[in-house]
Amino acid sequence: MNHFSQEIIAIVPAAGIGSRMQAQCPKQYLPLAGSCILSVTLNVLLSHPAISRVVVALHPQDEYFAKLPEAQHPKLTQVIGGGERVDSVIAALASLHEVDAWALVHDAARPCLTHQDIDKLIASQRQFPQGAILAAPVRDTMKRASGNGCIDTTVPREALWHALTPQFFPALQLKQILQQAVAAGVNVTDEASAMEWAGIMPGLVSGRADNIKVTHPDDLPLAQLYLSHHQHIKQALE
Ligand code: CTP
Ligand code: MG
Image 1: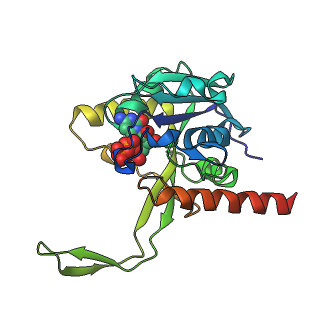
Image 2: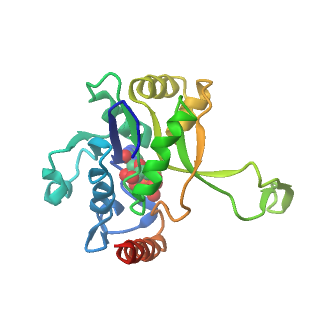
């Protein structure tokens, strides 16, 4: 069990349109494991005992969410998202009234998250009191390209990580820093990038590499495969 004393609220940006997925509907509503990507993601968070609430940010013209069973879940609230991912996260954080809560921000498009990785991230707060993110070490040899499509140099891999989600920070401070970073014109691609801009060094918590973001059409069968693999392991342990 974790000994985290503050309230933990999951923030789920789900207001994107999934343009790279080139599907008929926003990618978070594509079928997966008998439901859809967003349902799978929300269920991982809603069923975690340390998470007291889940706030999902939706597109202003969303016409799918109300039909999901999770829409009625007592732990779930919805807000209208914004033009960029960061705007959606800010909108969700702005709806919180809890002062001391910590926010666990997780992409709707990452359905393969496990409770074990959530536990690991929450437990890391002892080591990283200013917050941390799940991340995966880079595996391949990394190259920096020159302007003409050739290799300029090999970049040492040891210090490179893929930034994943969830990303875990004090909610009020995160909201303020995201707002300041946006106002300053910073390109905020994840929560940690805004914290870094503010001089805070978030911790890197090694997470499962199969916590992929469904981004391109090829990613969907992969997510399905990872999920059924997790299911098999779970059943074998029962
Ligand atoms: N997101 C959001 N609000 C936005 C844009 C994105 O809440 N204005 C969410 C997406 O719904 C997704 C997460 O942020 O869960 C990560 O973004 P990404 O994978 O880029 O999703 P999309 O922006 O929908 O996809 P694309 O960039 O291909 O259009
Ligand atoms: Mg996007």
